[in-house]
Amino acid sequence: MNILISGFSGKMGQVIYNCAKKDKDLTVTEGFVLPSEVEACQAANKEVFVFGDINQSKNCDVVIDFSHQSNVATVLNFCVANKKPLVLATTGLTQEDENKVLEASKVIPIFKSSNMSEGVFVLLNLIKSATKMLNGWDIEIIEKHHSAKKDSPSGTGLMMANQVTEIKKEAELVFGRNPSSGKRQPQEVGIHAVRGGGIVGEHEIDFISETETIKITHEAFSKSVFADGALKAAKFIANKEANLYTMKNLFE
Image 1 (cartoon, rainbow, N blue to C red):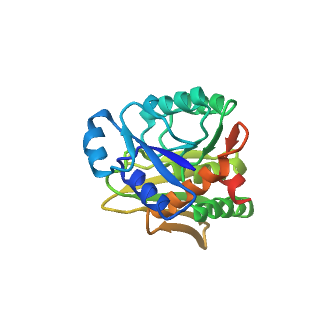
Image 2: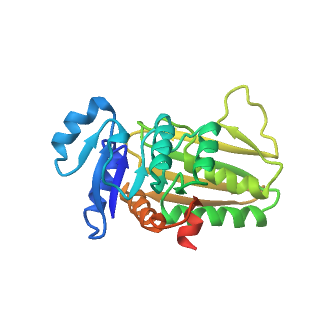
Image 3: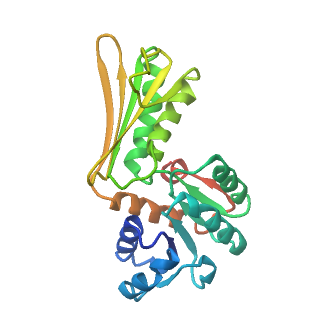
């Protein structure tokens, strides 16, 4: 199966490329990058056709997008026009982007997740179960990433919060706190973002009562965990019908 990586020059793009080399059933044939990056990226990756205009694509079966929110509409338009399955892992999408994804999924199969880790999928299920059982407990979410990450909170942090709000309908998300925040209210669910160094990804949710605390955490040691998940997703949707697929479809 031939893969086009959108965001090929980025850290995740290169991790996916190297992970795909270990799979005899997969070949990264094309890479979509910024026009200013084409020459240097092509020189460093001679076996991949690198371009700055996705419409130059000639030989792909599935598109994997690990790029930037501003790129999503372009990738969606290409995939819909050419009937290409899409694995969408880019975070920081706007509501307009989300609407476009939903419309595109009526034409092509789209696998969408802000985190491609199997461990995070389990984490999300644990959060839902704990929220059901620990009624009345305070809930706080802390996510940590490398200093170069642009979106905040992370897509995974928002996924964690969504698991809570599905059960706790009255919950109000609070993004960080400052001197004017005042006293914590019972319905609040705090989301706190930490950025520094080379942290791959750490996510924690705390359930806190007057007498005890339960912490559920996930830590990624390598970006390869996300790359492996994206490649599994690419295989999964390669021949699927048009629809919007998630980690639940892949692991259940």
